[in-house]
Length: 79
Image (cartoon, rainbow, N blue to C red; front, top):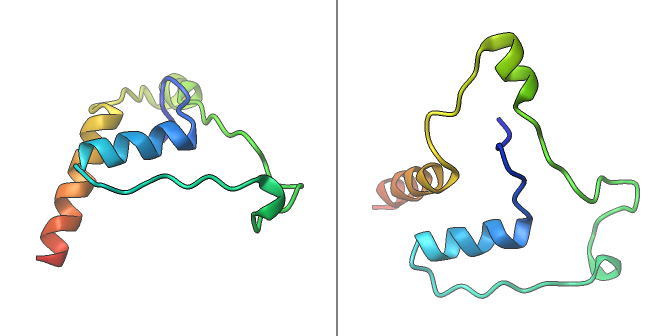
C-alpha cells in the first residue's frame, strides 16, 4: 500500500542503507543508459486515499519500521 508522503527511490535506498548499517554505495545511471523504456512511468506516488475512504485503512507502522521488519526477516532467513 502506498505511503502518506511520496519517497523517491534514491531517498528510499538511503534509508535502507542507513537502517541496515550497510556500507553499500548508491550508483546512479542516466536514463539513457538504463534498460527502461521511455513509455514507463518515471514517477510513481501511490495514494492510500481510496483505501482510507473505502476500507477505513490506516497505516499501522511507519516506512522505517517496515524496512526494519524486512531487514530482520531477511537476516533470519539467511542465518
